Amino acid sequence: MRTLVELLKDVRFSLGAGVLLVLLVLSLLSYASPYDPIQWRVVPRDLPPSSEHILGTTSTGQDVFWQMTFAARNSLVIAVFGALLSRAIALTVGLFAGYSGGTTDRVLMFVSDGFMVIPLFLILVLLAMLIREHMTIVNMALLFGVVGWPWDTRVIRSQILSLRERDFTHTAVLSGTHTLKLIFNEYTPFVIPLVLATFINHMAFVVGMEITLAVIGLTDLSIPTIGAMLRWALSYEAILLGLWWWLLTPIGVSVALFVALYMVSVSVSVYLDPRARVQRVGRT
Amino acid sequence: MKFLTRYLIPRLLQYVLVIWAGMTIVFIIPRLLPTDPVRAQIATLQTQGALLGPDAMRQMVATLEEMYGLTGSSFEQYLAYWGRLFAGDFGPSFFMFPTPVIQLIGRAIPWTVGLLVTSTVIGWVLGSIFGGLTGYFRKSRMLRVVDTMAMLIRPVPYYIMAMLLIIVLGYVFPIFPLGGAFPIGASITWSWRSIMSILRHATLPLLSLTLLSTATWHQTMRLIVQSVRDEDYIRYAKIGSVKESTIFSRYVMRNAILPQVTGLTLALGQIFGGALITEIVFAYPGVGTLLFQAIILTDYNLIMAITTISIIAIVTGILIIDLLYPLFDPRIRYK
Image 1 (cartoon, rainbow over the protein chains, first blue to last red):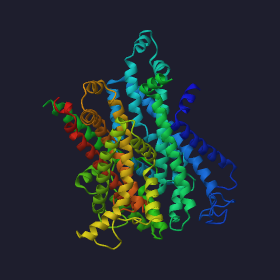
Image 2: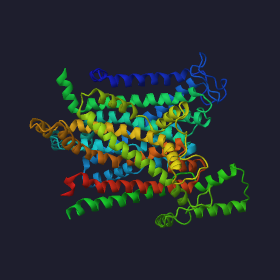
Image 3: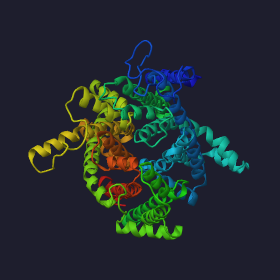
Image 4: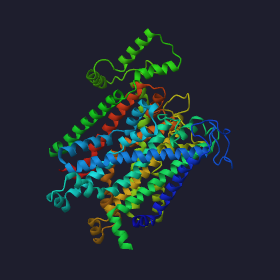
C-alpha cells in the first residue's frame, strides 16, 4: 500500500494508471454490449457519431463503440497472458542460468542471445503464416509469450549473479538449505519487482505485435481485437471514404494504451532504481 | 595478437553459430507444424477455381514437393537446404512464375536499405545528441520539452506512427503522396525531377522511422548520461575547473556513447522489423511490401527466402558494428 502511495506521487504513474483504468472499465463494458461482436449488419452502415451510436457505425454494420470495448478486452487479455507466460520463462531460465553458472549458463545465454539478434518479427510472421487459421486468443498469447523472454532473462540472471555472491547465500548453503528452496524463497523476492516492471513492457510488445500481425492479415480477423478492428477499417478504405470515426477509434485506443503502459513502466523503473530511491528519501 | 584470440575469434564463432541456429530454425518451423504447404497451395489454387483431376493432382503434389525441397528423408532435406542456401537458389516465385525469388528480392533490397540506413543513422545521432544534452543539462526548459515529446513518441508502435503521418500529412493536408516510391508508371532516371520525386515519396516513411528511432535513442542516452554525470571523475573534473563544454563532450559523451553502440547492435533486428511494417503502410516497394504480397498470395518460397536473407543480413550487420566497436572503445583495442 505504501508503495502505491509513493508511486501515485509521480505524475507519470498516476496519469498512466488512470488511462489504464479507463481502458479496463471500457473492456468490462463489453459484457453489457447490446450487439454480438461477430455478427455483421446489426446496425445501419456508415453512420457518423450520434447520440444513438456514440462513435458511429462501420461499413460492416457494426457499432464502433461497442466493437471497441470487445477489442480492448481481447487485446488486454492477450497482452496479460502473453506477458505472464514470457515472464514465467524468463524467470525460470534467468534463475537457473544465474545460479548454476558454468556451461549451463553459457548455453542458455547463447540461446537467448540468438533470440535477441534474430529479427523476431520475421520468425513470428513465418509461424503465424503457417497457423493462420488457428490464431485464436489463446494461441496468440502462447506465441507472443514464447518469443518474448530473452532480454529480461539476461536482466534477471545478472541480478542473481550478484545475489549469489552475497553472504546470506553462503549462510544458507552451509546450513543445508535445499537449492530449490534457496532460489524460490530467498532469491525470488529480490527479482519480483524487476519482473513486474518488465511485465508492463512486455504487455506493450504483445499488443504491438498483435496489431502488426493483424494488419498484415496473419491473425483470425473474426475475433475483435484492436489489430483486427484497424485491419477492417483499412480494408474498407475508411480514410478515403471519410469514415474517420472508424479508423481513429482503434488508433486512439492503441496510442492511449501504449503511452499509458510506457509511463507506468518508466515510473516503476525509476521507483525501483536504488539511486533514485536514495534521492527520494533525501527529499522527504 | 591478444585482440585476435580474445575478441575477434570468439565473435566470429558466435556469428557462424547464430547463422546456423537461425537457418535451422527456419528449416524446422514449417516441418514441425501440422499444416502442409503443398496441400495449402493446392487448396488456394482450388479456391481460385482450378479444376484438377486425380492424375493432375498427383503430378502437382510431386512437382510442388520437388520445388519446396520436400523429397527424401529429413536429413537429406536438411543437407539439400544448405546446398541451395550456399548456391543462393531459393527457387521460383509461385505467383510470379517463373521469376526466381532471389530476383524479386534483389529488386526490393535497395529501397529497404535506403530507408533503414538513413533513418537509423539520423535517429541514432540526433537521439544521442539530444539525449546527452537533456541528461546533462537537467534544468533547461527547452530540453525538458524535447524530453516530454520523446516520452510521448517513443511508445507509439511503428504501424500507428505511419498511419498518423499518412492521415495528417497525406490526407488532411495533402503535402506528401499517400504511398509508393515514385509516381505510378514513371521510370527512374538520374534526372533532377526524378530524384526530387523519389525524395518526396521517401519523406513520410523516413520521417516516421526517424521520429521513432530518435525518441528511442534519446531516452536510453538520457538515462546513461544521468548515471555517468554522477561519477566521481566528473565531480573531480568540475572541482578542477575543467571547462563545462570539455566535460560534456570529452568526458560524459565519450563514455556514454559506448553502451549506445552496443544498444544499436541489439536493436537492429527490431528496427528492421519496424522498417518492414512502415513500408507496408506506405506501399513502399521494399522487402516489407514484398513480404506482405507474399503473405497475401501464400507464396511460400518467397516468404522463406525473405526470412532467410533478412536473418543473414541482420546478423551480418550486427557483426560489422561489433567489429567496428574497438574504434570507439580503446580498452578493447589495446587489450
